[in-house]
Structure formats: C-alpha cells, structure tokens
Amino acid sequence: MKKLISVVLVLALSMSLLAGCTSDTKQPEGDGKYKVGVILYGNQDTLGGRIYSLLNDAAEALECEITFALGDYDTTAQLTAAENLIAAGVDGIICLPLAETASQRISQLCQKEKVYLGLLLRTMSDESIDTEVRANPYFVGNILGDDIGNAKELTRIMIQEYQCKNLCMYYAPEGTSMALRNDGMRQALTEFGGVQLSEATAPSDSNMAPVAGTMQNFVNTNASFQGIVSACASSGIGETIGATLQSMNVEGAKYGCFDTFDGMKEVFESGYLGVVCGGQAPACVYLFSMLYNAMDGHKMTETGEELLMTYMFIRSAEEAQNFLDYIDNPEVAIYTADELKNMTVRHNPDFTWEKLQKVMSEYTYENIMSKLG
Image (cartoon, rainbow, N blue to C red; front, side, top):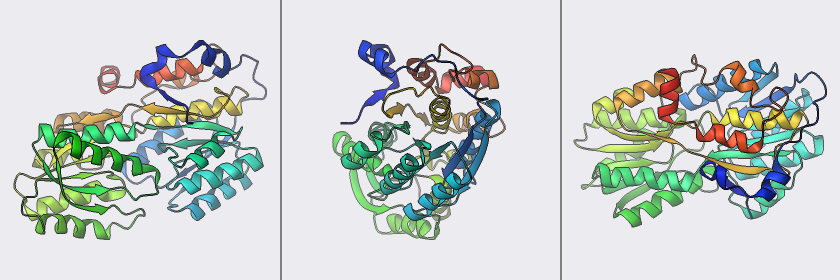
C-alpha cells in the first residue's frame, strides 16, 4: 500500500516514523556540489517556467550543477532523456513524468545506474508500478497535490459558487498521472448536483490545435451550456479556452481549471474565468531538498514517501495579479538562499523529514503574500 503523508498531519506522525524515517546525523562527505538532471515537459508556459526558475534558484544556493531535458512528451522520449542525463554524469534526477510507464522505466534505469530519483507533481495509480518504484532504494519520493480533493473543490466552486451546473468536462488523458483529477471532477458532479453535458480529453502532447475546436463544439452542441471544468491549463490550454469563449461571446459562461497560465488576469477581468487551482510549482523545491539530502548521504525516509501539497484556489483578477507578481514570477525568489540551505542536513544538521513537511504546510497564499507582498 502507498504511504501517503499529508502535510496537515505533520503533528500526528507516529513515533515509529520518527525513529525509522528521519534523516541521519552523520557528517556529509565530499563538497556537496552535485550534478542534478531535470526531465520537464517544457519551460515556456507559466508552470514550467516557474519550476525552471525555482530549481535553478535551489541549484545555485546549494552550488549544484543542473541540466534540463525539455520537450519530451512520451515514455520513450523521457526514458531517452534520463539515459542521456545519466551518461552526462548526474547524481540525481527530478522528473515530471507524463505517463506512469515513464516513472517505472526511469526508476528501473536509475536503480541500475545508482542514480537518485524524485517524481514531481505525479502519483502512481497502478499498484504494481507504485510498489516496484518505492522498493527502489534510490527513489527519494514524490510530491503532488491531492488531485481528487482539489478536483472536487474546483468543480464544487463552479457548481455552487458560480451556479454553473450544466458543465462540459475537459478531462486529463486516462493512463496518465493526472487522471485522478478526472475522478474528483466526476465525484463532484454527483455530490454537488452538476450535470455533464459533454466530455472530451485534453491533448497529452504540445499540439494545441484540437483545443479550440473542442471548445467550440462544447458551446455549439449544448443549448444549456454554462461552463467548462478543465483538468489542466498548461502548455497553452488555459489561454486557448479563454480566447475561444471570448471570441464566441458566450454570455454568462465561465470555466475553472487546474494550472495557472499567462493572461489569466485578463480572462478573470473578462468574466469568463471563475477559478484556477494552482500554485504547485514550489513542490519542486521540496523535492530538490529530498533529492539533495539523499545524494548527500541523508536520505530522509527509508522508502520513497508520497507527500500531498495543498494548492491555491484563485478567484479574482486581483488575486491573479498578486499570484503572477509574486508567487509565479520567475524573477521573484520564494525562498532565500539561506532558507534553501536550511532544508538540507549539510547546512542544518537538525533538519528532518517532519521539518520539511512543516515548511510545506506553511506555503499558503496568505503567508507568501505576507512575506513578499
């Protein structure tokens, strides 16, 4: 079974976990200047760009060399990227896998080559894959949001707060790590009295050509259409949905989506955007901490644990502007170099798994705005 540890349960961890899963306190060996590889779908959209900047900040603070493999959208391409990074001499890899088979095969490769691996913003719903990957001694863990819970809340907001009950659902591709969002969206329709008029599946690659046509079809074939809930908005999907609804001048319609995107403030102002679930990019910072500590001889848990991160729900143009100016701005450091160093045992010998979870729990819209705004 998976070992799911939510940040809201930090104070309730058992003494056995404290004894068995905290970092050791041996003195680190070497100079701590490790080579890290990152497999990421891209860095041109808001989410990818923010992950890119945050990981560069972390690498700089900890004097690590970081190499990005960008633009790979299937298992074969991501596995090839991992092979190339390992051939280049990386000590650890952070991967945002676009399929669970990618997680499995990259884990097998990393175990064979004795390279540490952390998975970003994804889970493994296939129990056999999950068991295999977590048994890999070089797997440091994975961090993601509570996809089912966040999807339920996103859909609830559309149904109850915006009274958009007749919805078209834009689901994530089944078989991908985002598919749990589909479960939450469907559960919310039943629980909160929504009606699914039509459904479609978002593209799993960078081809945005079908998106506008799908949105037009949603509107033109459903006379009672009130809105859209989308399981994703990255790679241009969010911008395309907003632009299509505006060009069609669909009165009273709104959409809610996962992932922040360029221009979301303007779409909020147009009235078409109701809510965005986002703010997940800093998960890469906490994963970098886990990876660095493992490379440095202080693996934080005996087996790779799954951490659930709380996301933010943005509901207005003002919140969107603040989010873009501070939280998602690649030019703004959410954590200082000293704060990043303090997430490592090398620089902070008292740092533990529980303290990492506490840092995660303090990542909220209010706290970040109080610190940076």
